Amino acid sequence: MTEHRFVDVSESGAHLHLDQGNLVIDLEDGVQSRVPVADLAAVAISHPRVAVSRSLLAALAGEAVGFVVCDDHHMPVGMMLPLATHYVQAERFALQVAAPLPMRKRLWQQVVRAKIRAQASLLEELRGKDAGLRALAGQVRSGDSTNLEAQAARRYWSLLIPEPGFVRDRYGPWPNPMLNYGYAILRAITARAIAMSGLHPSLGLHHHNRYDAFCLADDLMEPFRPVVDRAVIVGCSAHEAAAGLQRSDKTVVLQALQGRFLHDGQERSLFDWLSRMTSSLAEVFDGDARNLVIPAL
Image (cartoon, rainbow, N blue to C red; front, side, top):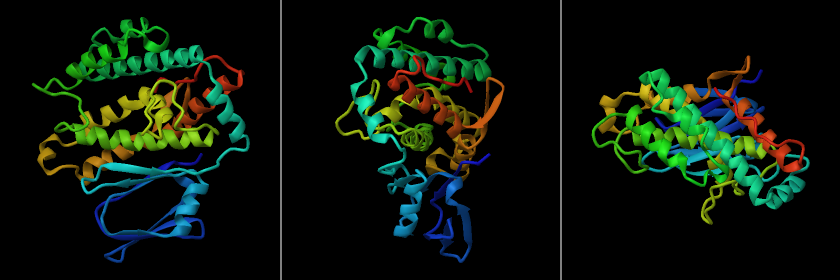
């Protein structure tokens, strides 16, 4: 089975190009690395001296590999995905646009329940209790009309990171930058799975923002955020927070996201599980299913 790999070019200037189906990375110090494009899930570049060939970009798009561009702070700010990846893409776009509001609310209910249960599992593993999240998950209504997702988040973060004054905020102090990085890579993986299933990443179930091209990815990645949370809490170096994002910390998160996860007796990559989830969403839009397949990893 294909290993879906992630490449992050941040420590050195480099020339990225294509050779016989491989991503070739020529670093400034003369070291060369090669990775089959077909094995890639995402490529992120954050070093200021990185050049990328047109032929490589076309090959990445052809394999629906997420190509992520980072700013001077090494935080992802842009992403490239292919224009066409599925033989009935136009038909699925139309069904996605026509999905009635009650269906989208029901699907969002399933996503939120799965997210809260995943948070409960991580709290049980790391803190020995779930802060009542499992019970809360069962109370989520269609469309999460009572906003239990937010209530669960307050309980979750206060127990997961019991540091005085910690608030989960995109622009907040450590470990927020590391969480942001992991979520951005997770978002790219999710967007790739969406594209491979012939769906449009802009057309969300719940998230909607005229400036956000990846609303559906933001929806469907929610139950998998604890994969990033666990990697950051367990494996990243808080004592290096003042130095910003460290290569070792990013490696920990990338390795976690390209690991294999067990669900229902099957062990698959995270991208494989996301692909099953997005395929099930397409089946719901087609009228062939009612519920999402959301693995409890």
